[in-house]
Figure 1 (tube, rainbow, N blue to C red):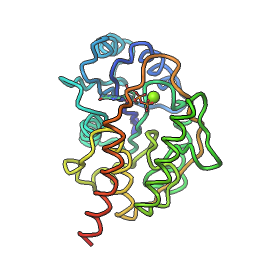
Figure 2 (figure 1 turned 135 degrees about the vertical axis):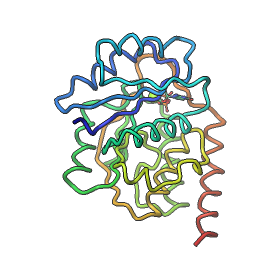
Figure 3 (figure 1 turned 180 degrees about the vertical axis):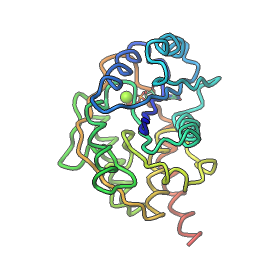
Figure 4 (figure 1 turned 90 degrees about the vertical axis):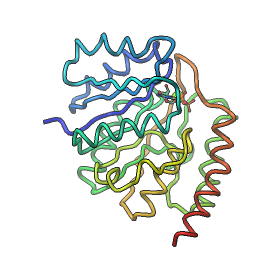
Length: 240
Ligand SMILES: Nc1nc2c(ncn2[C@@H]2O[C@H](COP(=O)(O)OP(=O)(O)O)[C@@H](O)[C@H]2O)c(=O)[nH]1
Ligand SMILES: [Mg+2]
């Protein structure tokens, strides 16, 4: 029985989707995949459907009607995986920024080293980001310092999107109460787990900028994060 599943959210990832699915499913360790596609105009979802014939029982697709953000895509994915009782639930981008060969490190941190939540971290020993423009590195690294300062979480890479959750962590969080829709969702999830005193382990990974397709980062996502993090911390203090 395979108890590990990788959730891959997609919006217009036609150049990457087949290769990333094959890269995950050819790992020595067995994983299932759940693609959460937001009705990508480039027909990423249709491509996944076609591939399901080759990977029956291993590749699943949640097709949503429209693009409503990374956070809500993951929440739908989490609910699906909880329902199916997967024990190890991973988050990974479709664009090869997260190396599928590193999945095993995240898995081992949870299965062998007792983590409830493991994070593929870019900022453990310096800055392990390849090919990102300087502005984007500064934004991400600056965000990680800002979030640590405000939230006091002892996590270096609080915005990381390469993560393994043990199911009980996701079950303990009220997923319908998660506020953020953009990348700040990653911060909020870690903060919720941190407040519940789950064991969080960071494993060093190298993050490589996408070679194919386009980034969906936007100004709205950034401002959601800046103000949202302050708001989130404030509310957590009030509810103490
Ligand atoms: N389903 C869904 N996936 C999204 C959405 N926004 C981004 N993604 C996916 O989330 C992952 C990370 O997004 P990406 O554009 O690479 O962000 P960046 O690496 O931070 O520039 C990719 O697999 C995207 O296709 C969205 O609104 N809905
Ligand atoms: Mg990316």
